[in-house]
Amino acid sequence: MEQEPRVVALLGFGEAGSAIARGLAAPSGWRSGQSAGANARREILAIDIAVGRGARGEALAAAARSLDMPIAAAYGAALAAADIVFSAVPGENAEDAARAAAPHLRPGALYLDLCTVTSAMAEADRAVIEAAGARYVDVAVMGSFLSSGHKAPLLLAGPDAGEAAEWLVVQGFVATVLGPRPGSASGVKMLRSVLIKGIEALAVESLVAAREQGILDEVLGCLGDVDARPFRDYLTNLLQTHVVHAHRRWEEMGLVAQTLGETGIEPLMTAAIQRSHRRTIDAGIAPADGRVPDLDTALALLTDRVVKPARGD
Picture 1 (cartoon, helix red, strand yellow):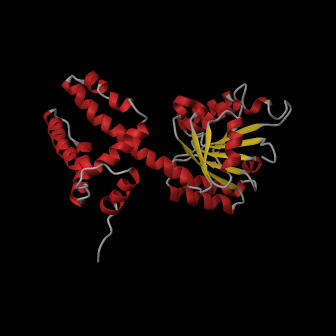
Picture 2: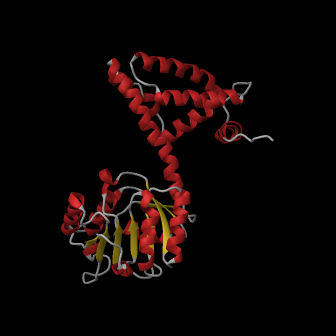
Picture 3: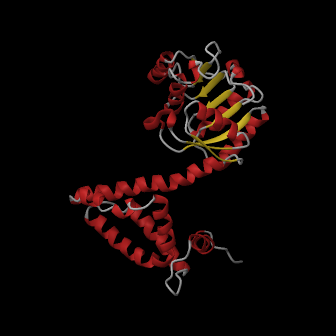
């Protein structure tokens, strides 16, 4: 950075905002003076609309006091001093936060959007921030602030992502640059969530049934084939072999649905899997020679003939 940041603002002081503040305010952190001289003025301020509203607002104010930092309920002129702004509000409030902050932002300030948003929502946030003269950085949080604190991995995208990541890493964050296109980091997080939250929902269905049948430890213990290789390799192998084995697996899921029914559990996720596999069967993409295609070929077949088939007139 051309000039060492002196003021950081946090929009939202929940799990993410408070974890970031604790990391920056730690004895060895950003306010310690170690990287900019002991007499350097360094401030952190927070804004959260819950302040002054009941028990949650009181808890947020107390947490801010413990870190010797001011917290307010409204966006105001104090933001004009901020060199770096972290937006960590709920995704549905991301654009509202950007619009509330924009009139007060210093030209050239870095606006790090950590909100869980879609690529299109990130683009809307970016337009608001850049119209105000600040610099927008799309940031996807790829882990949990609750378990990892400010060390939760961050994936950054945008023209200024490199500059932001460099500063974050110096402060002890774990930050990686994805590329220059804003919204792409948010897109990665959204599509990762299809997998992770999907596995979560599948685990609910499978492990509740396993417990009901008295075989929970055995079910958990039979996952060695998943553990035997990197998960990305296991996942891509599933996709490639899906092209060949969708019919057999669809038949098996019919028996799985029957098993769950016998256990008194609605096969909610299992029924969705059946429909997905049936869609592939009906598309008729299984190779006649039974050979498993490479990943690119499998994805092309699934995209063009199963997931997004061309519609004729």
